[in-house]
Image (cartoon, rainbow, N blue to C red; front, side, top):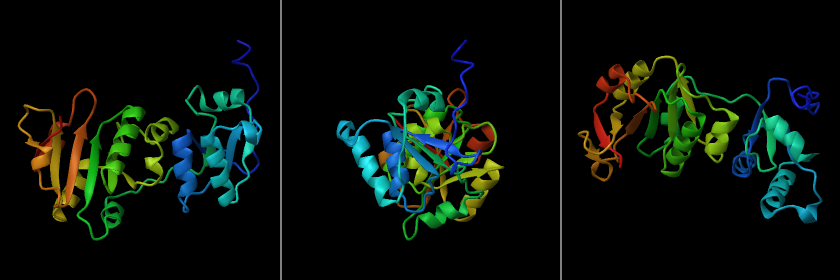
Length: 239
């Protein structure tokens, strides 16, 4: 009871009331490495420099390169701020996450390469969203597309699970997923529904990913919605 009635944390003056938090060593490292990212404030544990772990010491150095003076907060306050999230002693305050409103910036991000996109239809777990964004980034993807409704958002938990990939990989949030798929088809992007083995998919290693491609994954329970599945050009088998 006493913990629930504890006073709210006082935010630094540089942090607006609508700021989002990013926590975790990898997530905040990617944020600091991205020169276009904006950081209102950075909080690190209140320990002496000689007692900091190598990861925290590296973060402190990156912050200094960006001209950011970290604030020393106790781990207890960081626990309260992240509501039990695994923050690893690192929290950054940032502006609200920027979603693209359509697929075009994601196609432009491919440059002279064949675009490789991931479309998520109804993935509602932030941890799963983060893991999929991380996988898309590591595998050379150029962006992720989410529906505006019935989908996980890029929350602090998703950013942590993505190890910071959400801060460098373009993510679009669209009002109508099927319409966006139609836009991709008009730009000669093949749409492949990801399926488990035995469901009629072409093995991933046999697909021609040199073509512009978007791979679709459905929700954790029901998979792709029927109208989304019908709009796909084929199936890709993901073991």
